[in-house]
Image 1 (cartoon, rainbow, N blue to C red):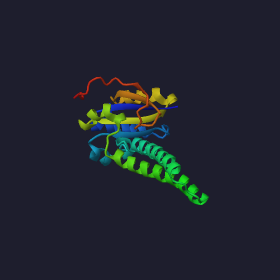
Image 2: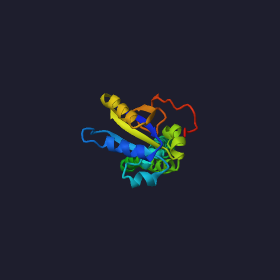
Image 3: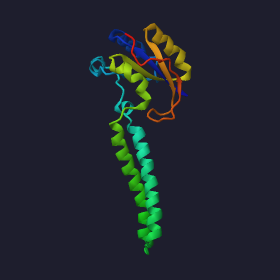
Length: 188
């Protein structure tokens, strides 16, 4: 099972050192991203930035929009079929299958667009650090590699500020295992 470990570093030099350590050939399969407001510095170092899917709530909005689209299409079908009689079996089948399908896709599309305009609630506790110009590293590793990653980050003076299970980010039922972040004010 994979875990997402979250680390914080405040200096660009430490970030370069961490990147050099994580790019070693024997450390394969670790997916890592950097969440920060200093996107230009990270891009200049040619390091992986956090994707818009992670930073925004697009996935969560699409799931909710698709669910509500399906729910309302079933309501429409329930009331529409009871109020109007459709004699043709072909027309009834087209309405019965195409309406829910179209509503699911439209709801998912619309929810995804609305989610793009929202911040991901799973990153809220780290947003204060990112907006202050610090670098929040999100690293996905297997359970076996956690100790090694923690040692590497300790050697590079990165502070661990969170640990999450593999559940999708952007959904409220993700499990936060470890989060020593108690104050909303970033340390200088």
